[in-house]
Each structure stands twice: as structure tokens, then as C-alpha cells.
Image 1 (cartoon, rainbow, N blue to C red):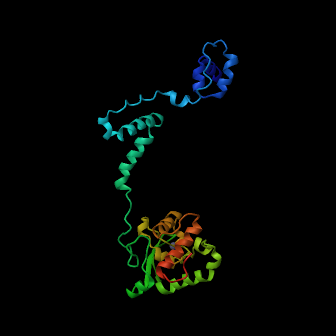
Image 2 (image 1 turned 30 degrees about the vertical axis):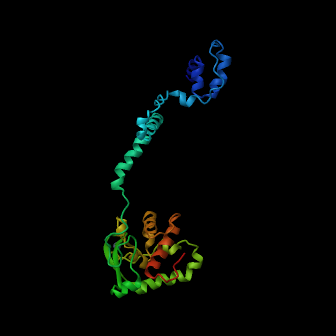
Image 3 (image 1 turned 120 degrees about the vertical axis):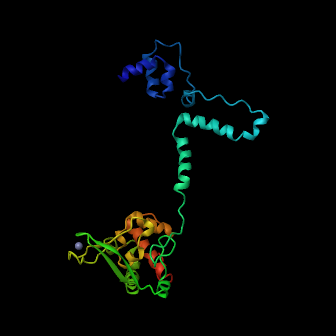
Length: 269
Ligand SMILES: [Zn+2]
């Protein structure tokens, strides 16, 4: 089938040439000698692209009066060419601009604080000093059993739990190499009071990222329950470098939160 097709095309040398098939070009002279009267011009290789379709005739030289419109004239001519080559490209981009402008708009940096220990800035909590001065000493959050799905509110003592995390970091930071250790990647959970299963009360991670209970998961050292996407959200809104595998992003999240609580602590990367 291809053969006959090619033969058919070869009847018209210029067409084969236009198709840009070098094989066809090479093959045509021996087999197609019957048609010598129209030898392909050897030189016009640049022609295939542009000559495929006729250009819109160049706009007549604009009279001086049209000068103010000059910018729009060439751009519309250019778009005519682009549309011929790749129709969806332009209109799509233009449309996206329109529909996404208002909706996808850039989200405001401030949100209603989802918890009394959170600030109005996304993924940001108050410092330890601030919280204690406000008499906020317990941080709580929802947990749900992996087995029986019973829910439970878990409360952590802010200072003692934070000191645990801080001590862990202080002791191991130099050999974590900017990556979350196994304890953070695969967190341990409290036991379930309902079904008695050990290690199964997972923190409930809010579906809306702005409502995630970051401090609760820091204190329970269960931030590893967050998806990579949620952790990237944290890093994005706290101006942290945020590429890499989950263990890197998780590490940055732990240190970032500790830094928010204790800005003077040893929590720089
Ligand atoms: Zn249970």
C-alpha cells in the first residue's frame, strides 16, 4: 500500500519533495524517469514549510494614517500565521488568561487562623513565648483509629512535647543530612482506646491545606502523615526551598515549625 502510494506521489516530483521525504527524493529519479520534463529544482529546500500554504498577502504598506494602529496590524497578521500552523495554541492561552485571572488569582497570604495557636499567615503558628503569654499550654487535635475508625481528641502539653522534638533535633541534626529520619517518615501513633489496637490513632489531616493542624502534628511527631503535596504547601508558604523527595521536605517542615516556635533555637538548616 505504501508502495503504490509512494509511486502515485512520485508522479509529481515536486509533491514528493514537498513532503520532505528524502527517501522519496532519492528513489524517484531511477523509477520515475518517465517524467523527466519537470526536474525538481535542486535548491529550494527551505520551501517545504512556508510554501505549503500561501502566506496571507503581506499587508499593503500602511498609509501614514494607519500608523497609530501599527502595533495591532502586525500582531494580527502574525496570529493568522500561527493559527494556521497550530490553531489551539493562541486562543487557548488567551482564554486561560481570562478565566483564570479572577478564579486562580493569587491567594491572599492571610487567612482566618484555623486554631488559637495559628497566626493569620498560612502554615504559620505563634511562637512559644507568645502562646505561653496567652496561656495556651495545650495543643489538641483530632485523631482517628486506623482499625475501628473511632475518633478521639488528643491533647499535648505544648512545652514538654516541644522540648521532646527540640531535643531529638539537637541530638541528631548533624547526622540527619537534611532528611527526615525513619521515626518521622513512619510515625508512631497512640493506641486506640476503643478497640485497644496499639499504634493506630492517626491524626486527621484537614482536607483544606490552610486548615491543617501543623503544631498538633509537630508535637506528636506525626507530620509524616502529610502527603508530599501538603508538606510542599507548608514550605511554599514559609519561604523554604521546596523541591525533593518527601524525606527532605518533611525535614524542612519539622525545622520550619520549630523555628516558628523558637526563632532563636538551633533550627536553621
Ligand atoms: Zn480502634
